[in-house]
Image (tube, rainbow, N blue to C red; front, top):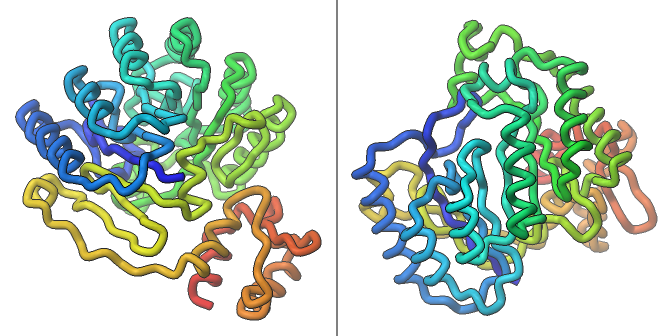
Length: 359
């Protein structure tokens, strides 16, 4: 079933690790963007009723009530089963909760990143563990129990002990879904750029080693499994039945349409994306769609899932050499006709995927 993604690229501050097309903007830019976003949605011809709606960012929890109401009214909602809104801890209020319920929001993703105050302050985040706990309780009290919590492994100054502190909070709050992202150095983020230059700002000199970051991730895998929140995709963990229906579309190659700055779309055959700058977006400069080969993408995208994939006879033959090489190195596992990444393979998954892309 199809999904819809709405990009709201505005924040109250830009985090040092963020490499998204988002940030702090003046009110007139936000107002102009809101008009263009609604016009883009209104111009769209709906060929199918979506099953999921996802508000990402940026910080869509800061979205003005009128815009949120207008968007949810404009998207066909008769078949919507999951409506997710990303929320920065510290932005949740009773008025916003009432608005979200009115607009059909039934899933909230909290961008916590860490429960350890020094780690948060180094990245520019202002919330605390107690604020997160209070807002999780508020969400549940208002009937929104489908909650995701994001954490980042590999933040400056992070240690096994501090990581365990964050995982202790996860166990205490017991969300049905958790996302664990491994920090990657990216020149599009201030922290990543500083690290590449060998600087010390934003804690760049205190980034954990690759080996320690791998240990942090594996620690999370083990502890979340013990807590009844097993991994179902490289970065995502959920109690059975609470997997993100929207995000699964990306890995199962199901159609989705994206609206707003830097939003991507896929109709099952063609991919296209919106511009990632305001000037180009306001001028409606959209790149031509790119034709894809889903039968080939299915192979390496599907390997992101813990259950892996069942290659066809043609795929076993086409990818025989890389499959055998990575299996001999212990990075891929075969069970019957199913192929999946091993625990070690997950840590070098990008390298493995790239080889299948180039095969």
